[in-house]
Image 1 (cartoon, rainbow, N blue to C red):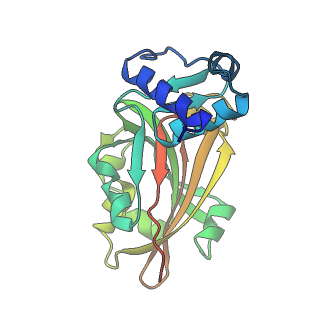
Image 2: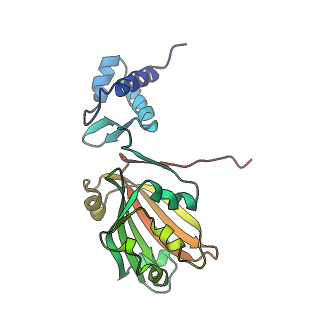
Image 3: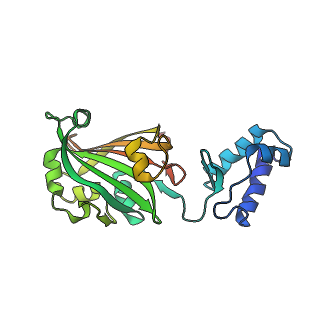
Length: 241
């Protein structure tokens, strides 16, 4: 049985990547060039690229083209529990951009269910292999933030193999029990583009997480922006019956 056209393209590009044809900053040919080379439609090439991206062999950067993923370049994390989130410290590094800062933020306070509009904010980036792939802004209720006031890992400019929720969980009398998460696509706002050294409006994967203790009291609100060309997010789903 003959393979569909897009699978033939996928196989050949896979082989070329394995041979190092697109090593470094050498882009893959454009859809138009590949369509002509293989005698197929641009839709077929686009379908082939979808498979290559899903298999984490290439990443596509708007305005630049499609590039092969070098070993260790793309950070892939499969998350299925609070423990998985805390385990980010195993292979990434946290760098503090703005230390714990008291401020008024009505929206964040509302999402945390506070009776006051005063919260404590913290900005950080995470790196993998020396490259920044995520910017995170965290808001904490003041009583929760006070538990972290003297933690050296959260000082301005500090770098460590730690996570804020890991540091917090170790100091809580009632530990983190659950998190609510929403994931959306969003163009990088100004503070994110500056922190991640990308263009304003660059596509990012935005993840909002709200952490609770076992009494459903909110402990932390975190909004993270991930660069899709350097990060892949996975979940494992099972049928309930």
